[in-house]
View 1 (cartoon, rainbow, N blue to C red):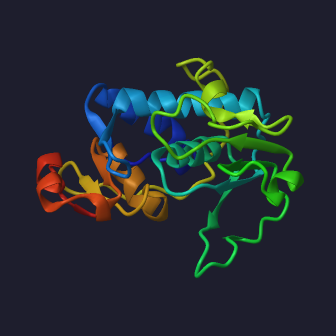
View 2: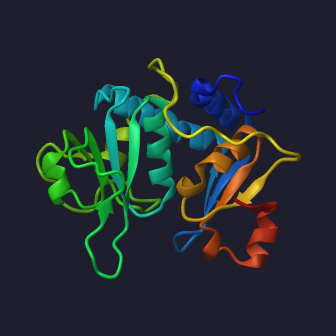
Length: 230
């Protein structure tokens, strides 16, 4: 499958492309002690559930500001794609530098939705909705007590249907890259959000990603069939 002729339908094209890969790996995650592999079916399932949760539980509207305050992780990637699929304006909070407090890029002070692993942060007081999750692949729920009205994202999202149940507005995220030759298996930095254009292009072309690139050895990259870097 190639990039959609109508970029506003990127979400539909992406989900179709991932589901078409079925059990084939589309994301290999080396950011934790053990390698985590997500097949096309599993990644599409996570994105669909996240879309359903944001639409049904959070009532996320097109143009709403979503601030994601998490370290790089494939769950962060899932949430960003789900929010873009619903037409939201997604901002990543920049990590702390030299001991300074982290700052939101884009100057988002009062987001409609805050996604964070620190639900007691002062940003949570300004957000309409707060989703708490930890950047750990196998965490079944948030690992500590949550403030009132804060959503335990992993626990809640699992209850949502595996099939898309809400209409999708125009895609609000970056456009995917145009298809090239062959099927790409890209080594990408972090969780791929900083290079999301080629990441989307790889999936639409029937390929996959391996990340974080700096945690993948040369031998592992060969075993994964990496074709290049994003």
